Picture 1 (tube, rainbow, N blue to C red):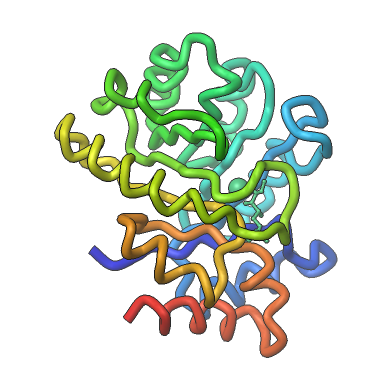
Picture 2: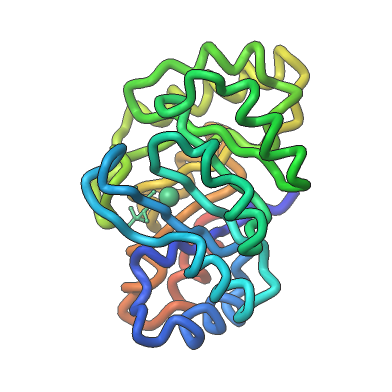
Length: 219
Ligand code: DX5
Ligand code: ZN
């Protein structure tokens, strides 16, 4: 399977969102990653359902909604209506994670589960048949442009082994500090979906070159 690249519009120039998403399409992006922040689970407030709806009107690429919010279960239906294809929730925000993942699937969407850098992934053992994607955070969530945390590598390897053990086909996504210097190491550890904000949208030669640079490292 080819490795998926999902540009995070957290680093996009929002004055020109349509053009920026178009450039992602032309550069061969596989999905658009939308970082939803609530000012509670993480310090800042970013995007909500209205932005997801706008993205849906712009592109037919899958919309990957990363919910960094408390009580995500209260928002799932509205994100589905807005046009999300994949919803990823944080282990840390979901006391009833089994049910929350079931709800995402029952809305007809792909279900993602993510773990902060210091959160163990052991709980996955009981959720293998409910997740389409496991996101291993490679920075502490909340901001773009942070440095990649090196212990992510062993965590991806561990997650990959665990998914294999329980027979789950879920894909491993990684998010935070993904750039030319780090993308190969997460691929080698088992990640097959790269989220990148800064290295794509702030690439000196433009968005398409940012995507191309990551792809080159994956050859
Ligand atoms: C961080 C977000 C990321 C962010 C990554 O909380 O989840 O998606 O956009 O940004 P970069 O690629 O700049 O580290
Ligand atoms: Zn994200």
